[in-house]
Amino acid sequence: MKYQVKHHWMRRTLAAILAVVLTTLPTWAWAAEEGQEQQVPDSWAVGYLADSYALGLVDDAYTTYIKSPVTMEQLKNMGEIVAEKLALLKLPQRAADNAGLVVDATRGGVANFLYQQAAAYDLPGIEEGTIPFLTGLQVIQGDQGGDLALDRTCTYQEAMIMANRLILAVYDANDAGSKGLLWKAVNGDNTLYLLGTIHLDRDNVYPLHKSLRDAIDAAQTVAFEIDLNDPEGIELMQNSQVYSDGTTLADHISPELYQRVQDMAETLGLGSNGLDAYKPWALASTFSTLSMADETTSANNIAIDAYVSARAANAGKNIEEVETYAFQIGIFDSLSAEYQEQYLDGSLTMLEAALDGTSDPESEQLAQEQAEILSKMFDAWKTRNPEAFSEVYDKEAIINSDDELNSKLFTERDPGMISAAVSYLKAEGKNTVFMAVGAGHMVEPGGIVPELQKLGYTVELVA
Image 1 (tube, rainbow, N blue to C red):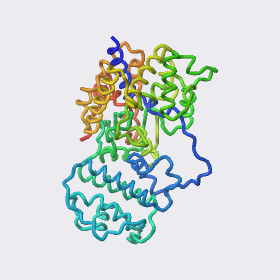
Image 2: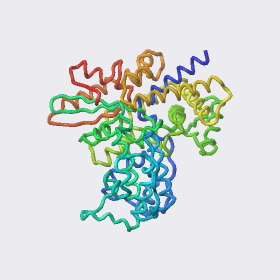
Image 3: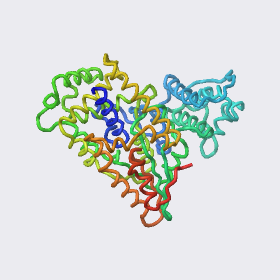
Image 4: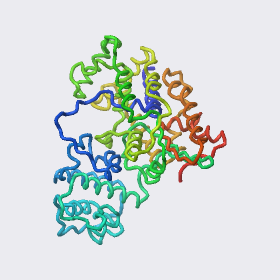
């Protein structure tokens, strides 16, 4: 019976990460260091930030170094990222001849170093050498007069963009990258791209395929469940996750569970009583997300929705939301106290198993099963295979369960998602909209794609 309950909890957790963006937002904020000079990227570089962040080429502190000269240590880290991403493609290898290539902090030296990462593979034009190869891929570009400024000191920003361009150029040339569950709906002059997302970063999900990046770039408006760039909404979310009535977590859960949370706070480096202010559902959501990370999860841990949001915002797109922070918060805040405690117990058990292991064989087995299911989901997502995705993700079973959270995640939300999609398709004029919501909202039963088709709209999987 205990094992069946845990399986029920895993189904609940998997439902949440495919349904609610709120579950992937950080539950606590790290204090920013004061007194650091902020370096603002050049306007021409902003469009590269989303991919660079997702690939790990920059981190949260990038405004402290992005305009500074690149260091050899930083260049080495970039090279490792480029090498790891290219290795995943399993391209034909070659004996690279790097004799005479000078690697230093000039633009030419950086170009030589990045070329070395690619020279291990039999790529078109690779035998021509650093500059012909990289300029052919537009990895290194000159000014309006064509000057490549190879002898000039290279900034981190320039090196980052070269590394970014190299990865994407090789992936695009090999039709590689995560394609995503992407559909295209058409009504008259209106085009609506529909992306079913997974609210996680794992299974080497980045970079995304060119067809997916192009669809985002083609849209004038990009819509999400909630606007991840809304400071008022984020503040509301942060405030809703903590108690404001003078009580703490210890007043709402059993002493045994509270002690386990205390131990996890220590493990996560948050110190004793570091999580006392948070409600059980907030901790459960965060613990669930942390337990689903794998060895490929970026140090930046940027969920797919957040990547799309950053790319759209940096490109100056019109950002809209089909729900609100208050609505999503209400889904969790309205859960019964008993359910919240069970949710926290199950999520914490899985995180304990993921981080340190556990003496409970059933929890260990469940953690392994969860990892296998998630990998199958991501495989289906990355290859744009909705049939394979539906085989792994049994939405009908989730909806028909008696779980308190499941009806709130889908039955009460899918109609609103469908209504939003219809409004975009029926809008006056000629519009291209990109709508990204949890993949669970896209598929049968009752998902956006099949319901739009029933309404007579043309909806097809992007080729």
